[in-house]
Image (cartoon, rainbow over all chains, first blue to last red; front, side):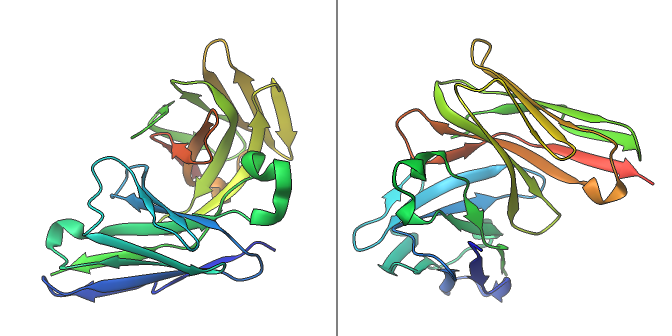
Length: 121
Length: 111
């Protein structure tokens, strides 16, 4: 159980275009999803927290107008990289926890999608 | 921001040997978690240890936590070639629901 599906798994786009990445929780509901970015052979950097029905919370240094996050339902969050540039090329990974865990929510693992490799040419 | 540092950055061992990875973090935590990542894939949760626990086992995995030193270790016993992956520790900052990841250890298990 607790499967997170991320789509697409890879995408190549031209500079200046926008790319949308979807993150779906398949068998649970998530009021909160997390978006991470990972450079080759490096760790995951938290970009933002996606909140269902409200605005996303961005980490310091992450441009909210560049990385648009929408969490319109309890099973879907999207990350749109707007006006992409080559420096946006990276591996983007989403994650989530089931929200109906009660007090255990804060001591439960995250479930990750398989990531999206974005290449901007 | 990055909460934890891991060492070694890379580890190469022979199949059957044990692998030990260490993680240090900076602030108080509710729990510390270990994840595994195969190349180009998402992360898989391995084990979670709460701040009031000192040791936890799961199969061939053993995790210790020393909150006074703000450090944790992951031991993989009797390693297999299939254990080759990157391993990350992650902490949820006290009173926060966000997971912040350490720098990771790349483990290579030679057959």
